[in-house]
Image (cartoon, rainbow, N blue to C red; front, top):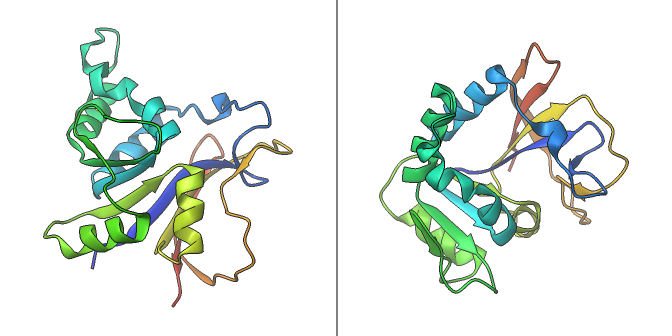
Amino acid sequence: MRRVTYSMSVSLDGYIVGPDGSFEWTVPDEEIFRSWIDRVRDVGVHLLGRRLYETMLYWETADQDPSLDDSKLEWAALWKQLPKVVFSTTLSEVEGHARLASGGLTQEIERLRAEPGEGDIAIGGAALAAEAAALDLIDEYRTLVYPVLLGGGIPFFPRHERRVDLELVETRTFSSRVVYLRHRVTR
């Protein structure tokens, strides 16, 4: 069965963006960027909320930017061909290799798990991931923990009153002192 994963960059105090909405502290160096490229290769479909979808639209046409280096062109090619499902109540159409979700999150994930195909079902965006976590749909949490304290903002982990036991299955420390942690939900 395909895994549902939630992966984002996070501050040490647990936020994906700061109180002012900024996330410039997550700009990856080459080593971290290469790790994102390696991980996206294992994704079969990416589920996104509207805000993350709009942020990532840049990569749909980034391959036309002559100033991009080889690794960014590689990312753009992978991202562009990756199937995406966008959850939005305000968008009426989406671009690229994306479609609007036709059902709720549980129904979409059940349908994607039942379809033939390989690769993880990745979830992007805090609100969508919080909904998936509340519904107990996430199989793995993958964090790139940056050595910064933001003091507030949008949390990576949803705030709900439900215990979730996790098993640490992978770690990696980058030269920039960023730490990758991969935890599997124990059921």
